[in-house]
Length: 190
Image (cartoon, rainbow, N blue to C red; front, side):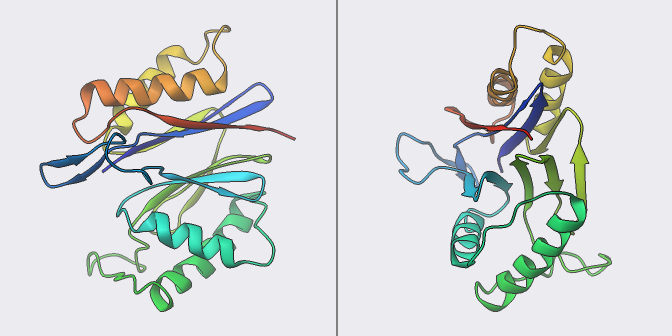
């Protein structure tokens, strides 16, 4: 699994992810894997994912094939984008959407966080889209990231980027499926 975070503070947003990949007990760190990034640039924003490693290829290929990059302006805009992405994941990338027969909708099988000039957002595997006011985290180390963000957010000396990096570091310290270095990007908010 992975840990991904988004933070909004002042006029900036930041998005960060760890760089560890695991296959059972086998660890593949950034020291051994060149394409270890879990954040994909999309237009003026960024999308981070946690879930299967193949999600990186799906996201890069899908968003790279669009004539116009999505703007990620609000939850409704993002939901419409994710409906098209889910369809492409099934048709073009052979996603197996069957997770659990009790689910109300097909799963996209990965969770995503978005930082755009319009804010910070989350999209879960069932395509529930949420806009966040301060911060959020997904993944196996998310509880540690959320705790770190809650404890540190009001420190006036810390930027959104500082907070995102500290959240990933806290997750890596306590979660065996999260590893450093972190990768972090910042976005100026409108």
